[in-house]
Image (cartoon, rainbow, N blue to C red; front, top):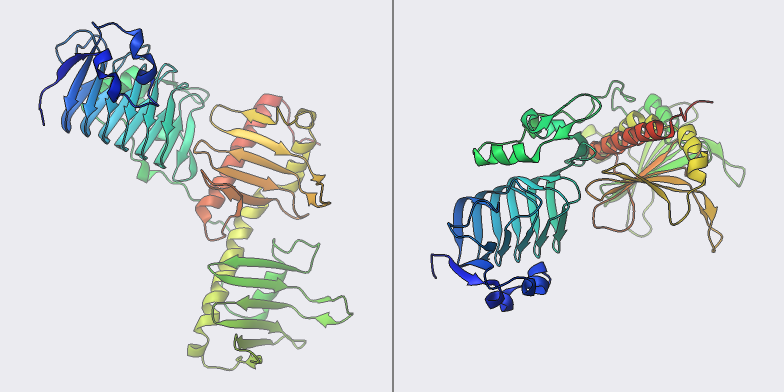
Length: 462
């Protein structure tokens, strides 16, 4: 392994350029005076400046640095984003901070960034054949990150819109980067200085705030269930909670492998009266909690064995009821979360949005709005070719390419669903995942602000 750079005319290195790199297609656009700084083997540097006015290393006419191995560098940057020295790493690139623009950064292996990965302006692109892992990805202007493997990003912020995502929750860019990198900062608009960010990195300082100290999750101001007793009061509260929509006398939940059905007292199709009850199906048993006519509670249990019958376990000692108690507490917790979050988005608001002329006028080719970091699209209710009724909904695509769906599937509340990044198909939001419920609510609040500002009307007005 050699430990010095070789300066080679660019056309002499043509056979080493990967096919999906810009250089493989355009190296012939340059003369023999344009050089590649070639390094064979693994390289470790404290910093790497890719600006044109800093000859690398002490050699004019270098237009690209080629590392034929792994590169480890504390700080990789350039301040001028209208054009800069290119970088190609045939192994992995590991850095503490990267702030670049104006060239192609090509990583044949994986790219790992401890703190900030920032690409600025629309004259540059970072291509990663492997995986990308970074603490904070800063998207500035139309800089492109083309990743063939998986992305693992704790935080993404968008310079244009001033917001982003941190651990699935919306976040302001001011909460991610220190004030020093902004100017003309007020409540309405902030301006980001990429040059200042680079200057801070040159000094070896961090531009990040302490993200872990940012509070996100709301504290419940009202708890629907104040105790976890299996009693008449809590059974009745279950049968009257927000999830009981009124169009049917029951609701179902499935969490952590346990199925629940909560049923109101009603007259069934055969004319028989059924009492308020809760059914649970676990990995071992069926449970039935029944409210009797005299307002007493019965507990029943049945195994999965063929021919087994329901057994009354109401009077069993408490140590024999631990399993049903644990699942009962889990059910009450679900409904507590639902009571906190589900009513926050009103059915009437979603109906009015979908009925607005601007929304009604959208078609398949123009189906939504972009706010700079999030995309809002809409689906009107319709009956498909199989005769199935498809409910109306609002869709929000987040900066990390996840989706949140807000559907009019029942008369009492707006149903919410989630689709993870790089997946297809929506999924239920687990009631114990309060972070995702909080995120769905915060994204919808930003959507309401966008609609109000851009339509110049109060859509909630009668």
